[in-house]
Image (cartoon, rainbow, N blue to C red; front, side, top):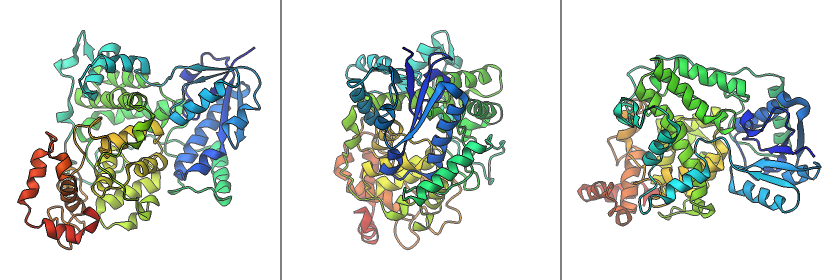
Length: 490
């Protein structure tokens, strides 16, 4: 009998099927939307992508809308195959179903480095830390990306030092707008269905709005090609900078279609590499982009599995404070700090912000105040169009909140207002002064930085990268005043 390939909603590219004749099953599960309140535009993006894929497949696709996956699979006769899903919960479901029916389980696809290769690399390191830089160099060598024989092109692996410039003294970068998709009748039907779900009591967060991210392989390829041709050259230089008048800057905006499985990441990397070889983009920009796609993204994917299912529950700093309602609801009026209000507005309006607002504004503020890392992981998962469990568990628990006590990052990513002032234009007309930690105009990030160090003084004093910062507490004459003015930092 013909085997049908069951695809999840983030396995939509051609590389998730074996040939052009394979039958495909796609399932819209309403229970997914009942369990948690996703961003409205994220829900639209996923459903639009699934329905566009079904339209492309035509008679090859069985498309079912049911309450649960199990209910859908009960309607399908014959053998099924499924590529490893991207969450522990979905993996357990697949394992259970494989014991009940003819279901072939296949290895994961959509990543440059597979789980077996990562495990071999990790286990071969002995007592060494699982450093992303080491993994990235290994991956580049194995896949011959930006290499000259056994050495990196131009003799350097890492151009980070050239990719940390503060923003220019203008309102926006001198770079072309990103490529934008055009909505169609499928999008109109998705919007109507989501309106009905909301009327029926299914909760969403964020605003509805025009679809800004690719939902087909053709659209994703257009977005990638446009970025490489018009924006990549300026990407690296300002990839860590923020501008209040330029939400997109020179970022690629392909994380959402990439995480929907619409692009093969190695193909993405090769496209950027070709731009360097042709002289169309500098090595610092191309290497920085390659580092994100086949370095950090694959590293996070593999750590999600390698560190085990219980990793999500790590909370080494004992952060237990619930996330406030204004933050949960993406309400920018909950704060007067320009940077934080701007970042929340971006998430509310488009379900997206680039990696520095995520890490050094949203995550930084949460860590300073001891917000529960598991709640925060769920918030990022639900609120970002490119957020998935495998993406957010290591990124938030490990990178952003240091809840794993240094398994992923060597120090907490916590910083005061001076960092934000250097890397953005938010502070100039803000009601708060990034230089002040006490008084009515004290910057909540500057006060929060010192409050965090004081709260975890003993825990962090032995960290070789934090020792000097912790000792700086002894020079503060206004620490008691700071804690009195900001009881949430105690």
